[in-house]
Structure formats: structure tokens, C-alpha cells
Length: 94
Image 1: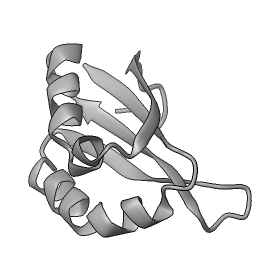
Image 2: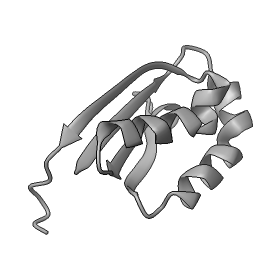
Image 3: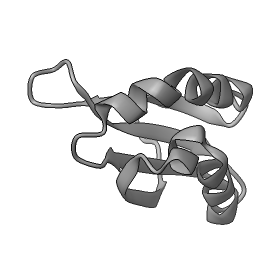
Image 4: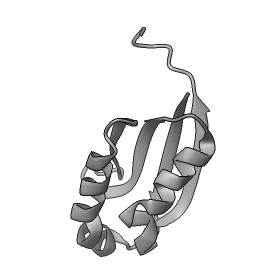
């Protein structure tokens, strides 16, 4: 099943995000078999990173929660709000 994981940064946390970014990118890259899509959400200026969005293929939501809990961004306390929802892909057709 697919899951959307949307993680919004705490205010004024850009320096924390940048300090832990390399570890986060390595972690996500090491989980590429289940991460179908990932990237930063941007602020209204289209430049500043304000969160992260993941599309994850997993057997259940608990597996996605485990992925999330081990993420260096999560461990560093970057997120203000996290939303996890099942997702049904319609387009592109698979």
C-alpha cells in the first residue's frame, strides 16, 4: 500500500534542517526501495524549505511510522506537524 507522509518544519528551523540534511538524504537514499517519491516542500517564495513530503510503499502504517521515527530530521526535532495518510495512486496509471 502507498502512504503519504507530510512533515512540516517548526518555525525558524532552517539552520537545524541544513545541519542534518546530509544525514537525512543518506537515510532516505538507503531506503529507496520503499520511498517512491521524496522532496522538500517550499515556502511561498519557492525557495525556502519548510517541510518534507514522502510517498512510501509499505505493508502497513506502522512500517511508515518506523521509517519516520528513524529519520535524522525526526530525531533532531525538526518537525512541528506530521501527517500520515494512506494513498491511492490514480495517475499516472500503473
